[in-house]
Amino acid sequence: MKAICLVGDFYNLGDAFLAETQALHLAARGGGVQVTLAPYQAPPEGMASHFDRLRLRVLPMRARPLAFLVACARADLFIGGGHAVRDAISTGWLLLALLGAWLARIGGHRVALVGAGVSPVHGTHKRVLWRALLRRCGSLCVRDAASADALLGLAPELKPRLRLGTDVAFLALPPPNAAAARRVVIVSPAIDPGEARDVDAPRIVRLLDALHRHGWLDEARFVAHDIRAEFDGDYCVRLAEHVWNELKLPARVANSAIGSRLIDNYREAALIVTGRLHGLIAGALLRKPVLYTGEAARKLQPFGERFGFPCARLDADDWPAEVQRLLAQLQRIDAAATETMLEHLRREASVNFE
Image 1 (tube, one colour):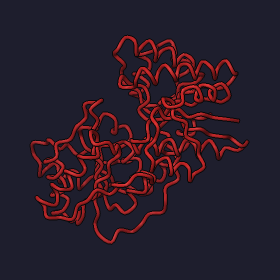
Image 2 (tube, rainbow, N blue to C red):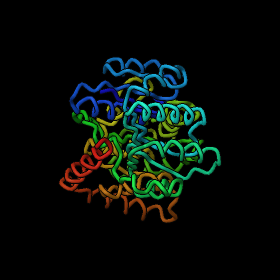
Image 3 (tube, rainbow, N blue to C red):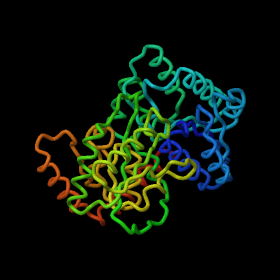
């Protein structure tokens, strides 16, 4: 059996982590499954080497469109996970994916949407292309209830094929934890011009100052999930400079080099502060306490609530009271409940590939 996973670009380490998790899960199912990962853009060199070490084939759709389409005619096609269905996806990707899905179906192969985040699609031509692609999927598995609602708003006639699963990342096997010598807080902001997501740096610094004064933080490390300068890359550098200059605390960017698993950057955390969904999931998989920030609450809340992780309202009027609420909720995170929830979500995630 052959399988192709249409995944996000590997400049986003969350998408790379999802791609790796999907590929390893499919390969472990038996029957000699050969998995190909198909991002739209060619991966950066360090990430390409990472997948080479795992013996996973990467076939960039844009750079090798004919090879991609030929491969689709001979393989099952899995679209997702991650925030797959949205306005910001390019027309070029949609056209290639649609042709690939058509060829896979003609060849008698499975086409499925897996673990997908879905948000409203407004552009007329994008809506037409998305509906055409989704109609070629035999099953449509989304990661949360809001995504299910958004997909039905786009293509209500596909309700019989819709299934509610969860994020594919819960299938990952995390590395062993490393005991931190210091109280390290790892911060992963979410900067995404395409989704109009941004974070106010002074408010992040204020939160870290509060964590330091209450004994949670001796060192801050910043993880850029999307290493491009206009996304998280430059912002993490500036945040580290703010913390060093204003709080006089050790601060650095944790992943200045690319080519390792996203989750490895969180291993030494005593606490994670994140606006990234896969920062939250990494924390849960590593059994770390997590604070997720309010500007990302719509996407993270359905998952954060399952683990009892508090949402930090960085714009709270009564900041001392907000800090006390966060600290109290962190203390109430229950280890046994986390284990139970992880096992439940792993079963939910496996639904994506059934």
